[in-house]
Length: 304
Ligand SMILES: NC(=O)c1ccc[n+]([C@@H]2O[C@H](COP(=O)([O-])OP(=O)(O)OC[C@H]3O[C@@H](n4cnc5c(N)ncnc54)[C@H](O)[C@@H]3O)[C@@H](O)[C@H]2O)c1
Image (cartoon, rainbow, N blue to C red; front, side, top):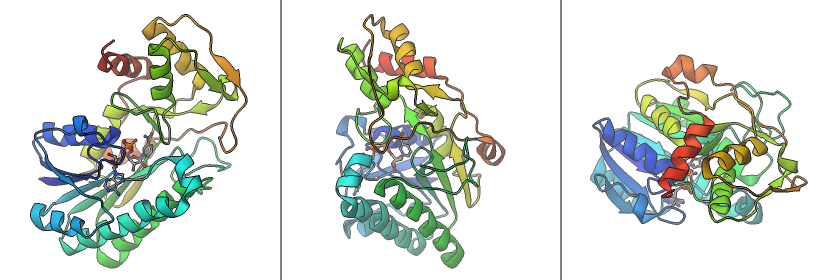
């Protein structure tokens, strides 16, 4: 099938591109390289250096006539979304609407949306979160992703667009940049490889749900055929503290210093965990790479 991957030069998007190509699909990438990198581009895919918020996106659809759209392009830096919520909404809401209109016009068979299980549940009372948990966004980024989900569902109801919404928790793995929504693994890996003492906020106790990027890419591939109009958590359901990551990395890298421990920063949640039973049922998806193995692969990809 012909797949268009927006954000295909980014961390997760580049793995999605690889997964689709490995499965024998024809792939085109749209990316403006604002946070993505040229070296992440798979040379077997056609590349359009295009901002999804511009009219040039229509030319890409005319040329490529995609059957599947995997939408990963986003402003995904929570801190930036707080500082500049209008820019966040421009990319994550207006850019998405343009993509949805073009998908309907071109008869796209399925749109797969990268939403967030890490941010969207925010201050939700239910723990761990299921897809039925009422989102309680704590940042403009989480609001823009949540409203994106609602636009997609509306396009499904009104225009018959078929879609799958994937809510990833904290994704980690090779090619992650130490910025953005959930870069704790990337931040710690970079610091510890450089022999620098990392700071663990919340005294290393905050709980997160770390899912390996290869597993996330596989979920995107499975969603090209399964999970009709569903919203699915893509998570491990396994609680991991920041201290657990530090200790695992200490083992992988052979780091000898202790971390600096500090209180949680404003806006950071103490725990975030999501149940993945629905993805298992709908896609036949379960995570296969655990934290230690994922960190080993991440460090190895950095040449160590
Ligand atoms: N990293 C995580 O843990 C995580 C968790 C949940 C959801 N997500 C979502 O997954 C997706 C990918 O995130 P990532 O971690 O790979 O981030 P990333 O920054 O590496 O990837 C985003 C890509 O989108 C591109 N992009 C940004 N604005 C664009 C625009 N206007 N037009 C075209 N391209 C544009 C960037 O250049 C980049 O290549 C995002 O939608 C993000 O919200 C990520």
